[in-house]
Length: 126
Image (cartoon, rainbow, N blue to C red; front, side, top):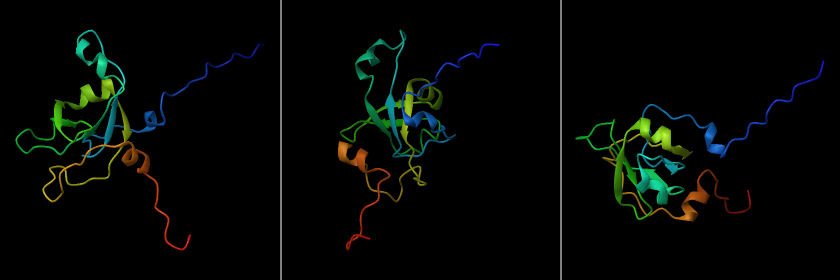
């Protein structure tokens, strides 16, 4: 009997393994990976990265604010739309969803994205 070769599965990014939490913490980084005919204006934004902004008490936890590279609150989304069109690149450990005790979000730079998850070396090489 001939062995059947299983098709190789390949994930697009390592972030595909991240699970979307019920409430997406502020400061998490998401990337737009696709659009459809219902949103043709988003075609030029495919590949763009956004951060999840702090939630608003008026809107509640169902309304997710997307913050652009210039640290401006650009657009809103719901969780389902985010899961359908975005990939979760980095999941924040932020616990203050409304940002009451936190400073404003700063501009998103390449260096801040690269430094996520890396530890700084201590003096003395240890």
